[in-house]
Structures are given as C-alpha cells and as structure tokens.
Amino acid sequence: MDWLQSIDWLQLLRCFCTGGFICIIGQILIDKTKLTSARILVLFVTLGAILGGLGIYQYIVDFAGAGATVPLTGFGYNLAKGAIKGVKEYGLVGAFTGGVTSAAGGIAAAIFFGYIASLISKPKMKKE
Amino acid sequence: MKPLDSKKDYQEYVNKKSPNSPILKNCFNAFWVGGLICSIGQIILDICKSRGLSQEISGTIVSIILIGISAFLTGLNIFNKIGKFAGAGSLIPITGFANSIVSPSMEYKSEGYIMGVGSKMFTVAGPVLVFGISTSILVGLIYLIFNTQSITLV
Image 1 (cartoon, rainbow over the protein chains, first blue to last red):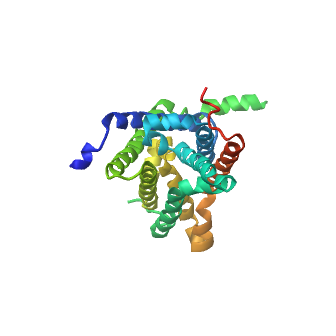
Image 2: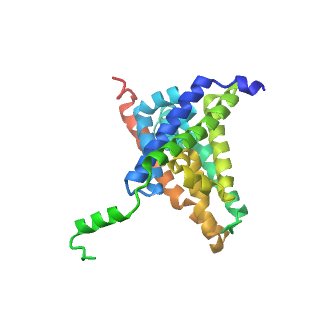
Image 3: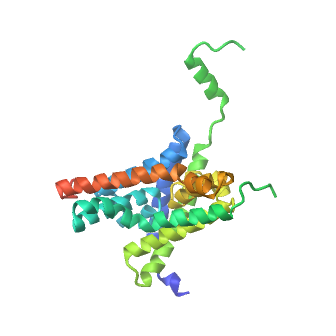
C-alpha cells in the first residue's frame, strides 16, 4: 500500500475542513435566500475568479490544497490564474487564451463525460 | 378564515405555514459530504504528485476524475439521491458542475441527441462558463493594464 504513504494526513484534514466550510456557505445561501442552484454555481465561479484575480484565493489554495480547488470557486480561481499566466507569456492574446487553457481539462471532461452519461442513462427510473 | 389584506399579512401567513428547513442539519450534511469529496480529490492529487506529475497536471487529473465519476453517477440516478441528502455538499464541489450538465440533458433526451441532449446540457453549465470565462478575461485585461497582482499584498 505505497500510495497510503503519499498522503499527508494533516493536509487532508485542512482540505476536509476548508472544503466543507465552502459547502456550508453554499448551503446557507440555498436555505436563507431564494437563489436557484444555477445562480449559486454562477456566483461561486465568478467569486472564485475575482478572488483568484486579486491573489486572495491563492492563500486558501496554499492552505487547503484540493479543499479549495475542488469546489467551484477553485474552477473560477483556475480560470483567473490561467488568464494571468497567459498575459505574462503572450500579452493581450493571453487574456483570452489563458483562462480556458488552464481549465480545458475540466471543461472538456465535463462535456464529454456529460454527453456519454446522458446517452447511457434512462430518462426516468421506475421505483425499484 | 379572515381575508388577508396586505402583502405583509400574506407573507406572515406563508411564513407560519411553510415548514422551517432544518438549516443546522443541512449545513452539517453539506459540510461532511463536501469535505469528503474534497478529500477524495486531495488523495488523488497526492498520489499524482508522488508519481512525479506537476501540480497543474495533477489538479487537472483530479477535476477529470471527479467530473467523470459524478457524470456517470448522475446518469445512473445515484447522484440525485446524494444531492437530496447533502444539498450544497455535492452541488458546490466540481461534481455539481458535472451534475448540472447531465441532469437537464437526461430530461430532454426525448427531443433528440443533437438538439435535445446536445443543447440542453448547457442550461446550467452555460451561464457558469459564460460568467467564469468572462471574469477570467477581465482579470487578465486588468492584470495587463496594471501589470501587478500585488493590489492585495499590503
């Protein structure tokens, strides 16, 4: 079980707590406001991109690892980070190419697996 | 029952009648399910990094695996049950993004594979991508103009 040795348990705890905390914020928004889940997703991605652009989200990522990158705010952070990296490397064009480049894996996987999964699914499951 | 005169009366009436959602319990469930999903991501990340992959590639692999798993769980109608229990716990992680692609396209499967599934996939994911990508472009442009990320580094 050599993969067990590659796990940093303290890091895992920080990841668990931060990821859970971000989800609590989302849950409070669902329960206390009348925002639909689509709006909450948009809000989280935009917020993540803004915080990423300001450089604040980097601190959370350094602290929590996947606890900060797996929630959708991390998706926004990834886009913003990519855009900044793109500008550093390619100037103006990089602002347009960088964001999607760094999130390309996630977006492509979501579209591909999403389509395949919809094809194999049954539209309505009957109760067992 | 006496008639409800004003909007305010009606609001009070609705509040009295509608059940209070147990917010504390919801938050607790969201916390541990969300934390668990992130921890799975962290474990995959650690394994990838121990194999010598870079931080960025490892992060992408984590996203792809989590998106793949949740897309298929949604297709099998398992994810909806988790979602009902966990609320934001499964919505806010990237699993919720995959779920938001699969569940509308499943519903519109009867309208065909191109205009049904192919277009309805983006009912929720579309706005997410529009706002996410637009914000990232703005961030890039602002960075280009001011050429500094140190606005916050006081």
